[in-house]
Length: 499
Image (cartoon, rainbow, N blue to C red; front, side, top):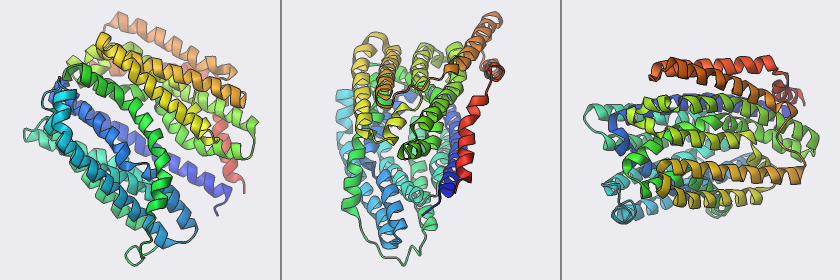
């Protein structure tokens, strides 16, 4: 069994690896999005975004929660020194995932014409797009599940290399090469499929490499039933999260033309940057929350959580104000026509900052044994979002989709806030929460005025102003005092020294 020091050291090390991979992934993905939108335009990008959203929803059923199941069972049997069951976990996951994925592929191939003619009537030519795109599903699903095996062996670097770095890089290179030979939308789709094939092969190679036994000689002890039934409850929760993330795009594709879907797809590329700090921090500190809860140290849990909440808000606010001030020009990087989605970006940025403001409340509930409550929140969030989209998109187009997202996120954030207050007796807000808010308000006022006076709209000078805005915000935040923000890092260092 690993010591507490080793566990915390492993968490910090893996958090650093994940942060590095995430940073590289953001850069590559953003460059790819700009290259694609400027080459194919809003209409074709809208068809791609629609197909990709359908793909992501179907992938929930193809993966079937088995990535988490493989992590769990690999770790379990490796601790028991049972290499046959460890290998059996990987191979069972591969067989189950490949089987389910193949069934979905066959279904989509047959149903694609029906979806194209009866559902997405405003997006002409969706049938061949769906049929080609769905070929990637088995490879994508296998990549995710096999990466669960390496993670279960407490090795994160290979899944980061495969999923966050190699896959998007291969896709970008493939898409650019296909563009050079004259392909457009189908070049994007073919490049995406090829990248998933490469990623799946790489994932399996690293799985064999990291195995703590001779992979060829160890027999397989299948664990189909255990893996399937462990993973089953995870499907619904993941499905709700993906519905929340992808239903907007699908409903925009249903009610609006492909060009509008393309504009909304560009917004979806940018808006999550507001909550990037929240996503990164929860990966690092979720184990800390669980540890404090298990030790019944509620006082430290409260203080640590409040510090984390303030920190993620401090990271999200400068991105939020940049989007609010420079939305049209920033969207212009995708092409001149995308600037028309500025209102939608601002609305979705508001929703993201509301989510960031309350901190990782969902993770707090999950890490402290409130999984059912967390699942109920996810179901409610997805349901509210879908209903609001159906009501608002026909009236206000993509701005209606942005407003629906913001209202649903804001409502669930409030619900979680009330739940945490009643269950644990505290909120994520510290007394000095005004400091990042005040720094953001001052920076926003300065650069809103500068934008009006200078009238700069080109992307180059907009990026310069955006960077300056972040620097000014950070400067004011530093002047207001950052001593408390170091508490969580000090806590980690303390834990690493404990035996």
